[in-house]
Amino acid sequence: MSYQYNEYVNNKHPNRLTQIGAGLLAIILGLVMSVSITAPMYVTSMLKDAGLSTAISHRLMDTVFDSIGDNMDALSKIQDSIEDSQIIDKIAQKYTTAMVEGMLKDKDFADVDVNIDSELDELVDMAYNGILSYVNMGDIQKTIVKAALNYSETTAKQAINNYAEGIYTDIYSRLQPLIKIYGIITSMTFKIFMFILYVSAFVIIIVTNPVKVIRYTLPCIFVITGLMYMFLANVLGNRYVAAISNRYLGRSVFIDDQIAYKVMVVMCVFAVVSLVMTLICGLIGKKNMKAMEK
Image (cartoon, rainbow, N blue to C red; front, side, top):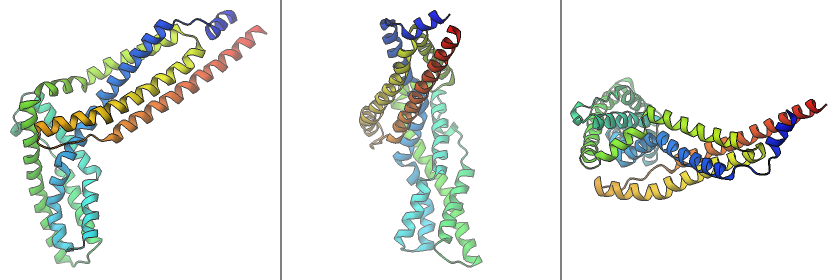
């Protein structure tokens, strides 16, 4: 038994071809999985960048401006808090999901149902509280401002729908094949299938190589995957997305580069965890081997 373990740990001739092939496969599968998971995040951020956040905030800011006046610092802070809020993210996510599902099912935009009433209520409360933080009002004035914001909520919803319908029509008529591909790679079935293949690639590496090789191979695979993803997303992705959006939507849209950085961080964490786990396994194996030799 101790001889077998010693051979596994100290084998001088691991299967290089299998190691390289499985390593490349793991990197490719890791990239595909990362795209599958992050694609909805990119679409949501691009939807916001293309004008969704301003379509909402401008309607609410009319009432804010009437209430605060020309206090530019206050107006800027309130508008930024609205446009950068997670509530806008939720609205963008809802529209992204509904619009993609509608395109995949060949629906007209009029048949796409998106309920964002609760999110708009939260934005109205945010704008209202922002106004109160800068202006002292009586009860009657508060009631008037609240009513004006509620009306702005209705116009904001209509503005969002008009904005979304324009994008929906342009994409549906010009980029339908791309939407089909997007629907496939973001489906749960595809993600599960890719995960099984991804794990299988690592199993092959672990089974066919000694511990001392696995110890450095796995971290390298994770780090290389993260670096390649950052390059593909933030360099090539931004370049082509800007060109495509400018051609088909009439405006240049850029992807959120923070998403790729987060993927890189996750891959680095995986690299550290794999290194620590192989070190622990090696120490435990050596300890057991010494105990058996005694």
